Amino acid sequence: MYVSTVSEHLQSRLVQYYRWLRNHGLNDSHSGNASVKIGEEVWITPTNACADSLTEQQLIKCYVGKPPTKGASSDSTLHLKVYEKNPQTNAVLHAHGAYSVAITMDGKDFYPIDFEGQYYFGEKITVLSVPYRDQFTKAHELAAEILAEKPIVIMRGHGVYAQAESLQMAYKWLSSLELSAKTTFLARQYGFKGDPTLL
Ligand SMILES: [Zn+2]
Image 1 (cartoon, rainbow, N blue to C red):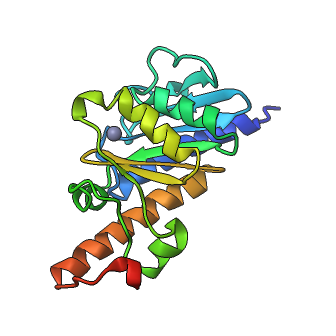
Image 2: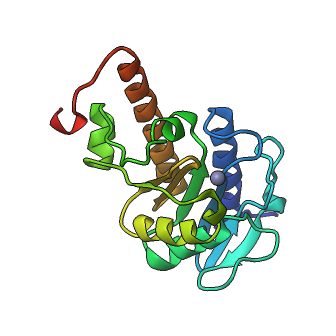
């Protein structure tokens, strides 16, 4: 009789969450990436992964404290650094939520205006401004520093990285931030000019 293992279950869930990010408009067909830690192993989506067709068999196995395995996502260095710096982290997700990116193009830290955004993320969400040419080097270092302490960080003009103790929570952070950004965007369209730090 075939008995599935915990690791197979988590790999399956990883593919599912990566696909949900795409299905709910937080990524396009191939953007973003995702990983889950199982012991010292880290399973990461491959370079150029397509969320619509990705399978568990295509995931790449890496190890905490070692260089990324060939074929793993080009953001693998960032993922592995987060696991190394934050022992509580079991999942890292990355998405290109359009509202989150659009509303932070000024490079200023983001203050959600809605209650839930402030409740979950505290008073502000860090926005890192890193030249596009340094997105796979300097940006990885800086984002990992933030994610050692915080659940989420925004990379200006690029996207959002979230870390959590579970895939579900990392998914929640990305989803919640995108809705806060959309709400803030719409409120500004309707003329809201208040200071979100005073709400
Ligand atoms: Zn990206």
